[in-house]
Amino acid sequence: MLVLSRKIGEEIVIGDNIRLKVLAVHGSQVRLGFTAPEEVPIVRQEVASTPPKPSSRGEQVPA
Image 1: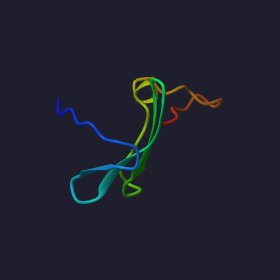
Image 2: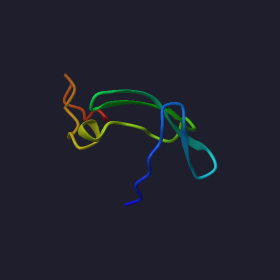
Image 3: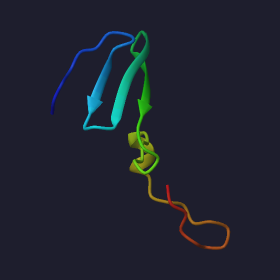
């Protein structure tokens, strides 16, 4: 795991087309802004690890 330190307003660039910007820090909470192509999914870990819930018709709904 790569660990980096950034200040408010500073960015991290991932590859050619993904940017992560530190927008704010309040105590132990950090607000991040992401710029990435639409086809790159960006979700919180707790959302990504939750299994999809069936819809009212019994179909699987993607997370």
